[in-house]
Length: 418
Image (cartoon, rainbow, N blue to C red; front, side, top):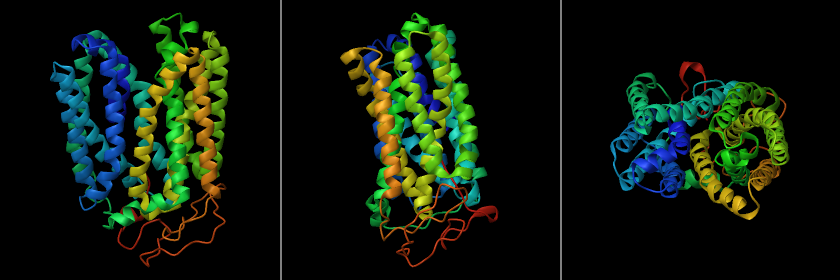
């Protein structure tokens, strides 16, 4: 997750150097970010549907290998066409790796520790923002952008070799039909939660991607001061990620996500008003970093809780929603900048964050589809579902661990994912 996240975020920091080296405009190179996000969004559910019989360990290892090859091609490429092709290869690797790893994590721990497991796996993305992207940008400044790519190649190669060894006993989900794969999308609760994931991701990215413009008044255009703000954001995100898992297990996904999205909206509102003050921006970035990282855990937890036996499929759709949110952010940010200047960018972030909150809460009011099994209530106070559980269409009842008859958890426990 750290490698995939760093590969996605570091491009923004290395954009001028990549464009100069490939003799292309920054705008042209930036399209590779959109291509990458859209391909992952489309390929994630296809991987879940078409490769359901492949061992979880080998599927993750194959994804890591494709990711490594894609980044390697980018490192040796000498044209924009080659660079975009490399991003395409890496995107298919990410589509195979991210949702599979997320769902696999749900099978490795008891249900009452799902939030913690999601937080651990999600920490890879959080650390990619806090450490990977700034470090890769600095490495690219000192030794060229290809050096940063080669570091990711090395990391990907190690992971590709290690996964088949460490994940030999991950439970294989039962093979289901295409109709069953698509069935989660017939549940209004799932659709509402996926919409929340999409808008929450957009709300973060629309400000983060354009943070240089948003904070230009307070930093005076200084890259060093911007780096301080991003570092504060990243460190705060690590803290938010650490506390989000236990908070979700303790208070439930509804309360945790509601607080996180509400605070994010307040923080971005403050940024729109106080963007001229560097001191105030530091405080805002710290608060924003905590809640932006925290919100992903309860959203994913909610998706798993709706129907644990569909975790592989819903996590694939979650990945799709997340990457669609990333793809939407650049045009939304550009429109805000063109419309009223930098202050409108965080305002746009507030609007989509509130949309995310509205959809997330609507998911708890939506009725359950008969074809989907009811979610067992893990622990904590915020997960009760007042609707009577519907029978599982296959005739099997999920165990208290969330595993079906066809999926025996390892180490005597079931599972979680990011």
